[in-house]
Length: 142
Image 1: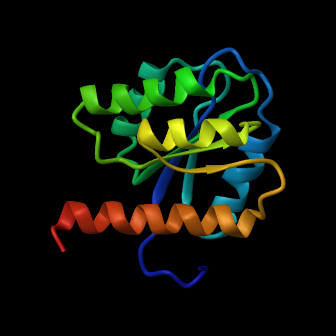
Image 2: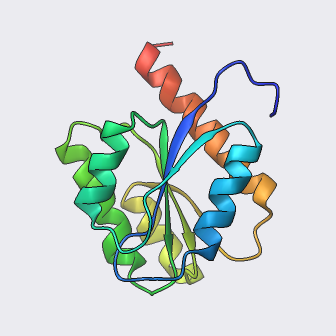
Image 3: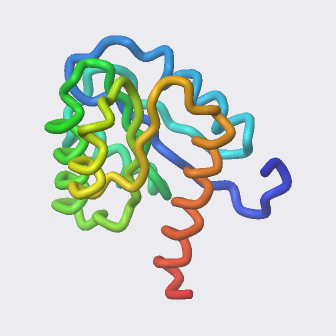
């Protein structure tokens, strides 16, 4: 991954009142180490703030982290906020403490991939790369 010709910009966001951001920071660093430009919004952001930052930063993917149990409400809210800003094509990946029984609902709501604690960082980084590649191909019409 280090030798990629295209450097993707991604955004990592912490929606809601969850103040635990160690995992989000670790992921942002892993993405940077893999050659991405990673923008971290910080904790306690609204869906609108995350979507606005994603559009402003012209990102190729958004990663969301939730440890509070509010992922079924907050992750789809970010997807909707992106759509309202004309950026519904930006893929959204999610992670955090998410029960298996919630995975189908999140995917149905537009979350491309969902990762839980213990997932190897290389796997998550690869998912971001794949999502960014698809997004870029969609924008260029290829």
